[in-house]
Figure 1: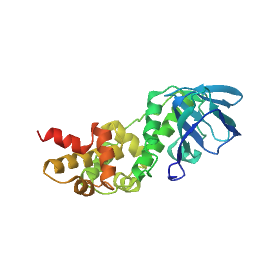
Figure 2 (figure 1 turned 90 degrees about the horizontal axis):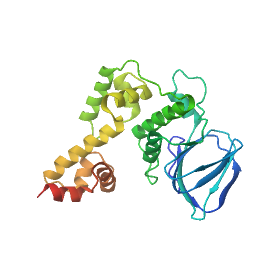
Figure 3 (figure 1 turned 60 degrees about the vertical axis):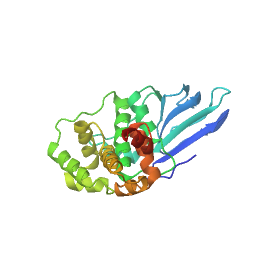
Figure 4 (figure 1 turned 60 degrees about the horizontal axis):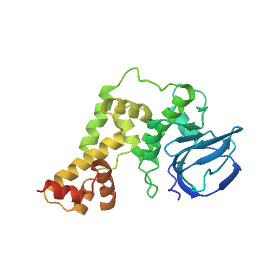
Length: 260
């Protein structure tokens, strides 16, 4: 299964048995999560294997193959990140990050990939793509030199201007470019500062404000389709998916619980 390409970032899910791929190379980073089975591959002259929950990082232009290590087969998801996307984020760095180990145990890295690879049916919006690009690039640098960059001084005024804009315009489609205009910061600096102050990305903050408005409308008697449209979701299915991800149940079930 392959998701629609978004600004050059491709995402796939693959299932197979045996040796699926002959030696080949990509011109992108290949970042993946093994979901089931054992993933085996040769990379930089060494054999490697990945089990469920582990992260795979393959550098651009490095030859590798791939297959299932057991008879039960293999299922994994992979994101292909063009190297120029990391350089857009990498202020102060002059070379591409190179993760020495192709199989990584890192909860933060795994969670970021799971979020990025969770819904392959739709195309992510602009804010979400920027968040993925920023976080994945930082994680590649972390595993390249053992350090994540720290923020020396938070631009609180710029971040709060963006926060206020998101609050006032939660039903609108907000772009990274718009937040750059409001804050005066480039999008990647802004996203790091925003996450440091609010513990989440601008995209996630916006979604949660929409969902809170949805709760208020449903309590007041509005229907699900009307609520979804009024609060900025593409349709009822889009709204339901985000609601369930945030609160662990579909909106109809939530409403039945709070109405008693």
